[in-house]
Length: 458
Image 1: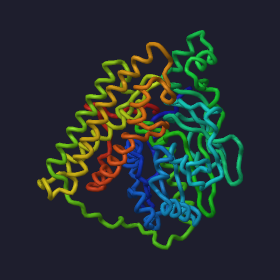
Image 2 (image 1 turned 180 degrees about the vertical axis):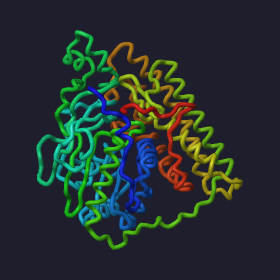
Image 3 (image 1 turned 90 degrees about the horizontal axis):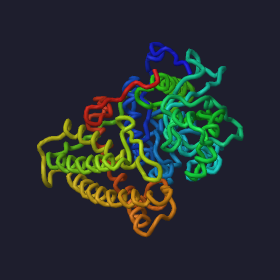
Image 4 (image 1 turned 120 degrees about the vertical axis):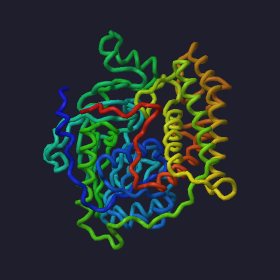
């Protein structure tokens, strides 16, 4: 499809409203790309933990942004008090923007908050493993699309899908129109498959999952819904993907629209000044060394996978991995540790030893990362061996060795458990502390070695 001119996409409305709230917990790399794009768009924000939301921190805001990540883990982090606060915020007139996993948090299909009556499409019916650029078609009469092309390219990263059944007080804002450049189903490039004679049914028989992109096209990509007095926009496309200039402009437009709608309601404690300062002691040099050691172990694991042709970098912050193994978790670990080390280098002080409140957690993270990476190498080699004689899937039984290693590292569900969950829980809170040490610096650009995020859809 012909791309709209990039020069037009660069224009966004200047943000003149109070800072938005960003629910941080269980976002990790998806949170980092979200912050990078918010900074690029000059949208002020306050990072809120689940504990702070449970304590009433949403009262200072009109818009709540929930980035991607596993919905189940986000709901777990909120707990009963946090879930109640989010529901009260929206039903009293607050606005909610959910991106991919953040959209899933709002749905009525468990595990979710049930903010809206929209449901997820069953796994057996949807396209479960699509990623990359795809074009969406906007709703022509909706103010969200004023001044934007009605068809524009966005990125999706393994989204769920909305049920097709229309529900009261909901509106489809955009549908999937056509795959774009670099679109993948599982580890198969659509552009290459179009030149083969192998039908989709045969690929699906071999892979054991739905692969035909036709399952996605024409279905809802973005939905608007009401809950009490509040308004929600739920988007499975990652509008915040760095470098997606048209998607980023649509992201900005969503926030502007939601803030305008929310401002019609009075929030008792809503203020425009910054949230209260959170005084934190600076991490010491030993803390930085522990995180540097952890990053080195994670980088070595990534290099190991590249040598064995298990994955390669697709974007500076995202791996592309072979069918049947995990890749998102390994890439997330490397990218988060690289970003974390970069921030610690900027904020570290001289305090070391018992006087450093960061030290104990940093040492625990290093030990967990080293243990995780050692076990991951063993698992990856066992999985590679298993692929020589059978078709491998992430879930299901393979052999006693693989099954036990997978259970230890990731649990037995797609949304990671096991050691990975323990490690990511530690990293999640530690990274939030580091971000808050210089929250106003805006240094969120994700880099690995010397790579920077390219502009891919302008």
